[in-house]
Amino acid sequence: MLAAGVCHSDIHIWDGYYDMGGGRRIQLTDRGINLPLTMGHENVGEVVALGPQASGLKIGDRRLVFPWIGCGECKVCRADEEQLCTAARFLGVYRNGGYADHMLVPHPRYLLDVGDMPPERAAPLACSGLTTYGALKKLGPMLKQEPVVIIGAGGLGLMALALHKAMGGHSTIVVDIDPAKRDAAAAAGAAATVDGAAADAHKQIIKLTNGGAWSVIDLVGASSTVKIGTDCLIKGGKVIVVGLFGGDITISTPTIPLKAMTIQGSYVGSLAELKELVDLVRRTGLPSVPIGKRPLTAAASALDDLKAGKVVGRVVLMPN
Image (cartoon, rainbow, N blue to C red):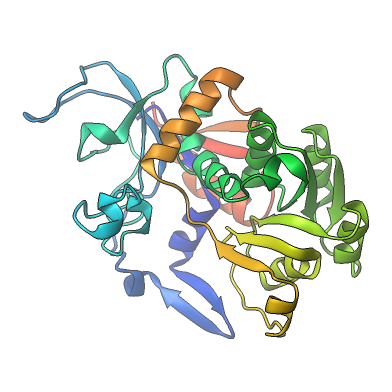
């Protein structure tokens, strides 16, 4: 292992549950996650050994690991959508990941050549990068035609900003409750920022978008953020929910057809999309997301800081 990113979804695994709203929780065991588990799904490593059937690699190759591995046999796996597999084998979630000095990858196809990219900058592409790239792709032509509202300016938000620019996006409006993160978003190129704690946050967005937003990507996924997203939409607009913060929402059902709105979930991305992302980064440069390097022994404190909202950008553990 050369680098392992610390992701907010690791906190849910660390806590042992997912908040489903209304006092309901999904425990790790309900998702088929068994302990003990080595976390870490944003990984770059150097090949040190190969199985007898592994081909296309050699000892010493540096590779980015695609962690969202499915069963390989079901309909979605055959359609190259392994991240949607219901019998998932995700590395760092269902199988041991990269918070370690070594890890096992079951097949060479899950190892992507990232050339001479610094490992600590390439590692977040496997989740932070892929997740935001997959969500941005779901916006279709509106990506380049109208402002995109990005809710959440943490590591995912700053990655989304960078990739939006690399993909030729129109402009971005970033929403966050933390002024330091709003400042980071503005410095990263956001056209405007909005305090998500403001009572009129959705009205500010409607004004900034001249009548309502066509596209909202919610990287938080809390009750309050999804409400901002749906409240600020124009007729025909779309909210893509990515974050797993937890909670629930109440929405007037006639509002959905009357506004012709779309509420869509987006879960990481496919192997093909990660390959597209790596190609995009090769052409446009690595996303300029702040990266804080820490030793593997600092994994617990890194998770503490991330949970407390003290991290701007991404923390990456350096096992060696």
